[in-house]
Amino acid sequence: MENGESYIDNKGKKWIWINSAYYIDDMTIEETKSNIRKYAKEIAPAFFELVAKLNGK
Image 1 (cartoon, rainbow, N blue to C red):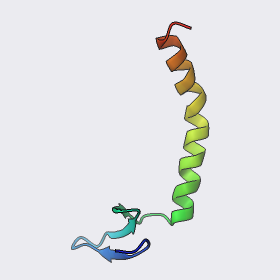
Image 2: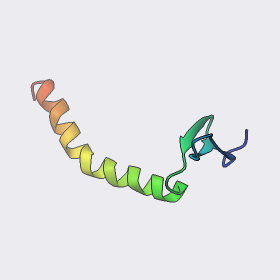
Image 3: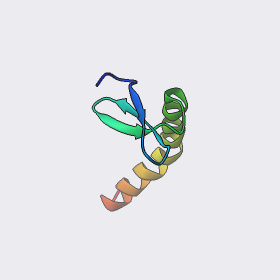
Image 4: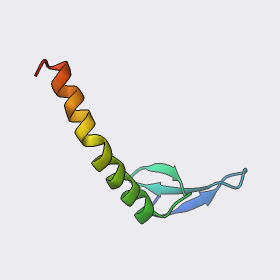
């Protein structure tokens, strides 16, 4: 499979092949990347604060 190849399953869901795995194509690739970046920016400070607390700092 090549990146970007897709198929529609028997329930009508579109799946897309990206880096050796299938993902549901509910959003475009760019929307997905954008959402991941947004989520990472929101969660990162809390994550690092939690790690610091667990390490006793």
